[in-house]
Length: 379
Image (cartoon, rainbow, N blue to C red; front, side, top):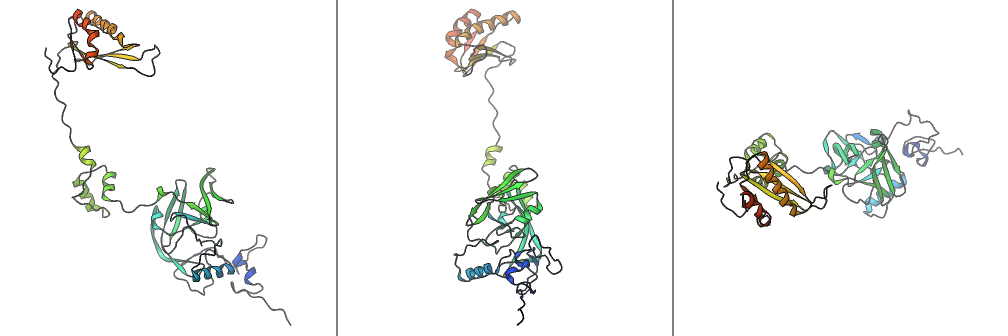
């Protein structure tokens, strides 16, 4: 009796069975691939709905027959007891923004449109075939920014998906990145910059990458956000903008709490009751300090003299407040010698503190001491 010829139910070829099918399990590195008989089957994207008996479309990601049976049993029973490491199948997700790092998926796939930084509708009806044989429709294609250094381009948005898949092959082909898998983590490295740009963690025997919440797309900006971004324009400007931009809806009843506080006019300062018509008719004196850090000369205070008419200022460093008397006497002498005039009035914001020290200087020089309690001043 002759030897029974083997036949593969997967690729419909002879001389082997489904357990040793290269088309299903991959070609060994030491065996050349026959491109004529075994066409490429790495692409999981198809245009238009596929037929169930169409063998040309290879499922993405590819699994063995044993894994198919487990998936079908799990789907039919609704049980979550099977936790096999299948590409594209996950029974645990930390959050909606987490990404499963998939070495078997040919494209990035996302389940939430809010994770995209930009997107556009898919121009042609396209589908992805799942391991259970069903088709999932791709509605949008866009960009997802996971971090300032890690961006995913040409990401498929599939509303029927429950998880997000990060295709390692698409990422490494589109960028100069490398992905290193360790026992408890996964490291993303930028080969050109020679630095780490992402770090994944293991959950439920799958590698996950958490997206940064700062990069998620928010909904349509409200009128308050537009009003703030544009620098708080007036009601008239906002209404004109709403007429030309359809995405902006503006109501005349809109109230901004910041505008009245920032745009209200301030009353002018009252006119001073003190007036001078030449220098040294009135000088303002004050002491500043003490300071925690002394100067190079050891001074912790400084004494200021400001002429009311010219606004000219003199500053004297002092180690002690009592030095003010000496500096004020020197200033009187300097004015009398250099400018041939006499100071008429001395004004201090500290009032009584200066009174004991200036009492004698005032009487010796004929000047009048004024405190901040005086309401009227006449020459």
